[in-house]
Every structure is written in structure tokens, then in C-alpha cells.
Length: 301
Length: 243
Image 1 (cartoon, chains in turn cyan, red):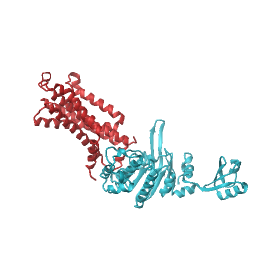
Image 2 (cartoon, each protein chain N blue to C red):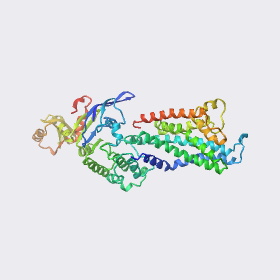
Image 3 (cartoon, rainbow over the protein chains, first blue to last red):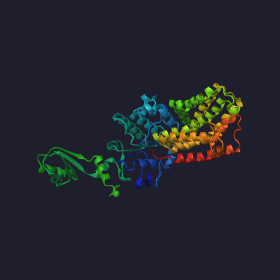
Image 4 (cartoon, one colour):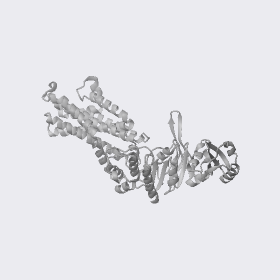
């Protein structure tokens, strides 16, 4: 879908390289998370896929067409990162207006039901809460019955319940064979709701693969325990331990081989207690992969 | 796809804005009554044989409709700030349908504004032959085309905060140069003939036994329509960034 994408802005301090060359192909029916810290180039990439920005170099193909053609054919629905609703229409009217723009829209009432807006269908848009506003924006993205849905940080203003309802709806959409691409900085959302994650940092893709594989790639486990009065340097020297950290009496050992490390730890320091061994979360993987990506742009798989 | 549905919802939400009624429609009416009501018996303004209520009805008709057309700019700037314009760009709504909705909404506002002023004029004794009402209204409608384009262009070029002063300033300046409030002579008159609002005033002055537009009038209005339509189209097409 994306080939050698490059986009720079003219900033006040010279050019800002928002996207530095991305090659990504997303197959139909995939649910993909686009992860990255602020300024990673996620929104710029989304703008390019939607035809809202033009790449300086490289090409984009959306469902076998140019972005503009895909949008004009009503194949794409999107929820942009920023956006309020226009005033003086009811929720139902606004969604109906959006429906009128598409060649094969879904039924308005069905969409309102799906995103949980039936109760506020008659409210004017300016009177909605932040979470309800997000749901209306989701409904607007969905109403055209798109093959590809792109959502830029969709759950930002939603409460816990709203989020759960949102992902439930998303799973149903994915099950219907739609392609879903969402940007998020909630790592657990990417972990729980996508088949695949694309990690971006500094305008590059630093990792791309199933979320389990990304976690596995980092290959570390962390041992946490309570162990007073042993210097971190001594712990870091244990076999299988990469680095050690201490916060009060609590220690955290990042291990390349946790089996080796735990045996050595118990042998050397029998007083150690409250032991936990955890696999790296996506968050750890994320930090490790994005932290030094300017020096190692070749990490990407 | 229902091409006119977007226009219908656009009209619906525009006319639901109560503040619009107070300021866009109420203000010219109040102005008119303040000026014309105390002088309703002046039937021979400065020896011209024209009644004062009629003269100011035509002045406010051109001013009010010009303002109505330009109000498209406020609405567009507001939608851009809300991010709605970008949302529309990722729907199949065509540029043509979008612009049609904006133009028709502006005309609907102008029509209400004009209708109210005609009624207000009638309450102060203005009476004209049906043919004159029609000719005047038709020529005003044509004279408003460049302002539809100007409103759209400003809406896509300026921010919410700057559309107000910009529109107010431009309309006030054009109104004076064009002889909306009082006849202009000499240098101002020479300049005035090259701005489209001058011909809008001339259109309204059909009711004052004016001659409407000669070749010059049609050329100026047509020329500005082309120039401003291009500016509006370019402004719309380039305006894809995050506000």
C-alpha cells in the first residue's frame, strides 16, 4: 500500500522530516495498529493514505487506486485525530447527512445502534459529551460502509465503558472482512485489538509484525523482587542479567536469560522474596525499539 | 448518493442558528427603520423626486445581501477550525456539490434579507410596479455572484478570528466606494465603477429610475466573478492542512 513514502514540511528551523521513507503493505481484512510517540509521523502517514497530504516522494495505493479515487468511490472511512462536530444538527441528522454523501451507505439507525448513540439520537451535536462526540465521529466514519477504515487515536476522549463498546464494534467490523488501521499510543489497545502492529519513530518504521512477535523480538524478561542492601552493580553482574535497577528495597533485573538469572539470584541471595518474572510488555518492546532509532534506522523488519 | 441532501442539511443548520437571525437579518432592519422611519414623509430627497424610504431601502438591500453572501466565509472558517472540512474531504462529496451548497445557502440568506427589507420598505410606503421589483431582484441576484465567490475564498484563506474584521472592513469600504449610503463623485466614483458592489447598488437603483447595467456593468461583474471564482477554487483545493 505504501511505497518509499517521504514527506517533509518546511519548518522554521529547516525542513522537518515527518516521514522518512516508509514501505508497508497491508492486506485486505487485516487489523493493524500504528504505534508511535507524538511526532513519530503517524498522523502524516494517515493524511497521505487519505489524500489529505501529498508525499514528496514515493507512492500510495489504496485498494488498488489512488487515495483520491478510493475516497471518491466511498471505499474509505476515517476518523481523524482532531475534529469537532458541526453545530445545529441532531446526532441522527448529522449521521444521515454523512450517509447522503456515500453511494451505498449503511442504515442510519443500525449505525447509531452499533456505536451506542440511539439514546442521544435527537440531541443537538453541540450538547454532547466528549465521549459521545467521539462516537458520533466513529459513526460518521462508518456510515459509508467502507472497506478500509482508518482511525487516528479513536478512543482518546472515551471513558472505559465507551472504549469497551468501541472495540466491540471494531471487532464486529473486522469480522465482516473490513481492513482496519488505527493509530494509538495506548499500547494495551494495540496488543488486545490488532493482528499486527507497525511501530513508528522519527518518521521511520522501526518494527512491523504480529504483536506477539514484536514482544518476542525484544527477547527479555524482567525479574522483580524485594532484596534490600545489595548493590545494583553486583546484581547486574549475575549471569543472564543485562541490567539492574533499584527503587528502595525493590529490584528489577532485565534479563536476557531469566532461567539462568533466577538460579544465580536465589543461590547468591537466599533472602530474596516477592519474586515476579514477567515477559516484556509491548510497552517495554516499544521503548527498546523506538528509543535509539535515530542511530539504528535499520532495525525495521 | 443524494446530491442535494447535503445542501438541504446545510440550509437546515444555517437557519437554526438564532444569532444569525438577530445579527444578519435584524441589524439591517433596525438600521433601516432608524434612518427611514422618522423621515417617512420625505418624498423628494434633495430634489431628485425619490422618497427617502425607497432610497435607503435600496442602499440596505445591496448592503444586506452583500453581507449575507459574505457570511459564507464565517461559516466556512468555523467548519475549518472544527476540522469538519477535512472530514468532508474524506467523503465522496464532490467539490462541485460542496460549493453548490455554500453558494445556495448564501443565496438563501440573501433572499431572506432582501425579502425582509422589501417588506420593511412597504411598511414605510414604498410602492413599485411589479416589473420593477422583479428586474431589481434579478439584477441584484446576478450582481451577488462575485460575492459568493469572495465569501468562499475568504473562508478558506482566513481564520475564524480574522474573517469577522476582514468581512466587516471589506463590506464597509465597498459600500462607501459604491455609493450605497450617499452618491459618490469624482475620484471615488471613477474607482467605484470597477468594483462589483457598485453595480450591485446600480441594480438596486433600478427602482430609482436607474438604467441598470450597461456593457461596463456586465463586464465588471463578469470579470470579478471569474477572478474571484478562481481564487475561491484555488483556496479550497489548497486548503487541506490541519487547522
